[in-house]
Image (cartoon, rainbow, N blue to C red; front, side, top):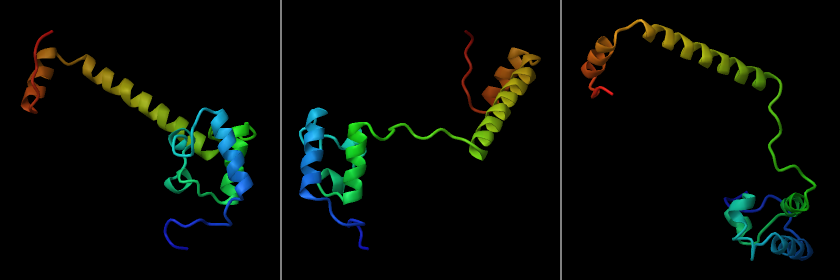
Length: 120
């Protein structure tokens, strides 16, 4: 398949007309004005859809398809939770380490590293 070509049979004129009417009800003049809101590609914003893409967009406009991404479950959720716990632990460790260091020593180290330090 060449770059920028459709990956299936083109949408029927009835599907395109129905899409235009649904977009008009949603407050859009044409496909280009709906591009950002509905995540249409450049090809689609020009009115070129496959029949499958047109059906999916019709379902989305009618509210038959959820627009929110599916919830993260399984291993990905466990990894996210573990990363969050590790991040919290690192933040607590850094705070505990900095608690005992005098402010003038911290300021001197920051200045040594090229930072500018001014008193509050």
